[in-house]
Amino acid sequence: MSWQDLSLILPAFIAGIIVVASHIPLGREVVKRGIIFIDLAIAQIAGVGVIAAGLFDIESAIGTQLFAGGAALAGALLLIITEKKLGRFQEPLIGVLFVLAASLGLLMLANDPHGGESLKEMLSGQVLWVTSQHILLSAAVLLPTTALWLLLKNKFGEAAFYPLFAIAITASVQLVGVYLVFATLVIPALATIRAKRYPLLKGLTIGLLGYGIGLLVSLKWDLAASPIIVWCLASLSLLFAFVFSKAKQLNLQ
Amino acid sequence: MRFYLLFSLLLLPGICWGKVHVFACEPEWASLTEQLAGDHATIFTATHAQQDPHHIEARPSLIAQMRKADMVVCTGADLEVGWLPLLIRRSGNAKVQTNKPGYFEAAMEVERLDIPESVDRSQGDVHSAGNPHVHLDPNRITTIAAALSKRLAAIDPDNQSAYIEQLKTFQAKWNEHVSKWQLKAKPLRGMKIVTHHKDWVYLNHWLGLQELATIEPKPGIPPSAKDQKRLLTELSANKPDAIVLAPYQNAKAANWLSQKLDAGIIKLPYTVGGDGQSQDLFNLFDRTIDLLLSAQRAIK
Image (spheres, one colour):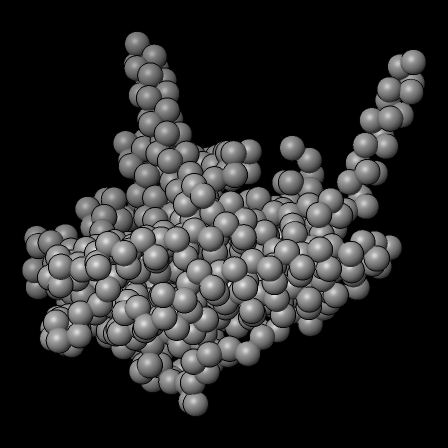
């Protein structure tokens, strides 16, 4: 493996660093609240926004982003209301919202295959093909959003969480795809949810190693990058969870 | 002794340097380039016959190959619009950017069918440059071969005479086969087929096959219940001889229609590598015509 080979996966790794850095704190919140499928629902709603932009013949990237972000924010608003009124049923409601958005997308797509392509891209993600411009734009959205969440978390709680989460997901899903976003949010958070010390730091480590090793494996055996990173994140988390629990046992003794 | 061994190892890549690196999007163009360039090119094929060339998954090798490519040979006319522009941009390779001689779009070298008068989204996945699936008309291949050979010579001027020579050899062999195919395929004229997607238009045009309907109501859009009903009523009155399917297409809809109409399905290779026998452009057409003829015989 030469430097030139490594430069093939470098942009994807930088994208990974940004997604990991911004999603580990959000992921902890998602797992704590037990609203695991919220990212799928929000991404799907943003996808509906992209299709709607297509139906209104909006071609510009910014216009499409505004539609996607607007739809995601509307979804987030709805989720704040449902959490207030029907808190106990938040998770099933998120599931319902997901299938509604997905089905609405299919209905709207009946006459628009181009929207279908953007939707499919949004779901599977092509992390290897990100360009530096793409990375800068996403970093400019993702990092401040998460910073804002860390600042506002104790003051505003869910009122801040849902909208900020919606913005972050809309950006990250387009950068790396839904599967990777889901994996980055949930898997490291799950592995470190019981950690008493430095849970965020441990989550970040798992995330970065997962992307790094996943991309190297993808390079070595020429595999599609996103799915292999998902598997690396999961295997590493299992390993870390095991090591953490062993370490804890030793400390107690 | 050891010194010489090391020295000759250093020279080894030098032998490869002389070759033109070609990035071919589809197997048909890899095969044509191979015919025209012979030993003067090393060819990488981005998709295989079982893959839908409209969409492919990003792998590291695609970027690596695009980086070292001297030339890109693709269908063009928007067929690969979902991934090729991204890949070329991501590679940063100046030689193959779309305005450079290293970028060759086969479909743009010939007249295309189905060019829409106006393009809007309501018509489905319509390519404003016309139908891009041009490789199934051997006469168009003839035109494309001449243009591709010229382009190869422009990129690799040292071997110009070799390319001219190879083109002559190819054309002689190709023309001979085309007349043979046309003669053999005469009984196919007027054969009634149903296809899945508009990717057989050029074959139909060349052989005089009659496309009664496509299963997709509009390109890229799956049929609704109403479309299915319309398809059934139309085709019950005018029964097709066969339903044609490409290797990369899902057989579900074709199976459904085949049961309802009691019509057979033929899986045509569609491109080089589409089945075991179709290993280059020559036996791709041999095989396609044989399969169509045997399907026709089966009905009678």
